[in-house]
Image (tube, rainbow, N blue to C red; front, side):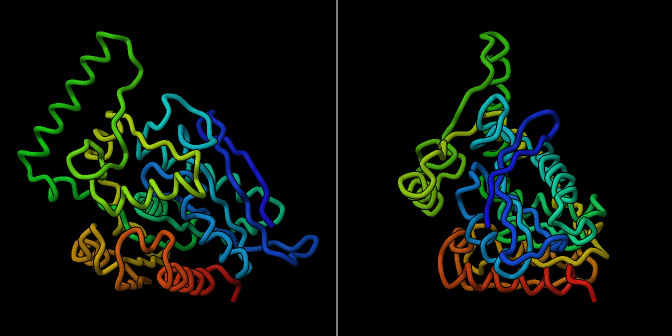
Length: 299
């Protein structure tokens, strides 16, 4: 069963879907999972594939839109501040713990791409989160991709936009979230462009292909994944693609800095294969369910 829900994060209404296991009896409380999505994605993208599987396995699951995205409130639209989204995750945990169908002491976190980074942050700093799964972890690799001089030049352009907006009074300047190479998007490569534009044409028509330029400043500056050594003793599962655009070697290096209990699963797939494509979604979901089941079920 899925129902529309709303919770508040720093005064802004976040729109979500709560999935509740079928057959949950009156007074019964299920373990639960908060799901965190990828850069620019709305809750129609990716999250239902996993949340439905979690509910079928006996978990309540909360999928939601971050502030300023999708059906959630907040201005300027499509403005991404990692810290704000991490606060949305933690406020989602708070809301979920108060629901009558949920056991507040058995809450896990699951995230994909930048949502995976948000869950590393939650696992490190929120002791209410009892198990963490990070899928296709969206590590900050812009410097490696662009080179330091290229990144510094890009930052100069982004920084100059602050002066321009101060002079004009505009709230935000936008760039495409995804595009083909050379067309100015943050994620300017065919895999991301094909995935998001296909979603927008089919099952996620509300997807808005843009991000504020200031979002990119915040993304470049974010180092939330560096908190990974603080997650232990919370159990950590990482799932990644061997052909992911985020280098598997960087994810393995990060994983080695985590304490026990920990596990890494590497599948022979691309980054967005773990979003919607089979057999990888099923393999990823099965591994996630097994991990959450091990640590969120009562002994």
